[in-house]
Image (cartoon, rainbow, N blue to C red):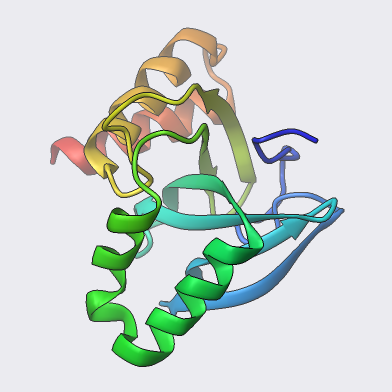
Length: 160
């Protein structure tokens, strides 16, 4: 079983493949922005790292255990979303592989990359995740493609 989620181009970030199922939403703002999806029996915490109010978004996915899910549910129900970030950071930070993706409202998931575990890299580290997907997107997106347009839109969004 893979530690990283398998994303399908065009999938919506909270149901990123035909075999993924949204099982919990912790934060919703016009769409699920933090939650849990299950794919092939494995659970993944997902969050929108940037752009939940825009048409271009950066998403991060982290494999979690059943015990992690139970703890997240317990703390979320007890403390709500305000302290929930601290629970994620304290319990799920830094040594797990992540998958990051660039998506748009109109085209769904356009680009995705797996990141190896790196000490200090967290699903909550929005700035680093955004930088990584921008560098990756600039390298792989073909000129004039919808991927390139999404990379440019993200760059304008975070620099403006």
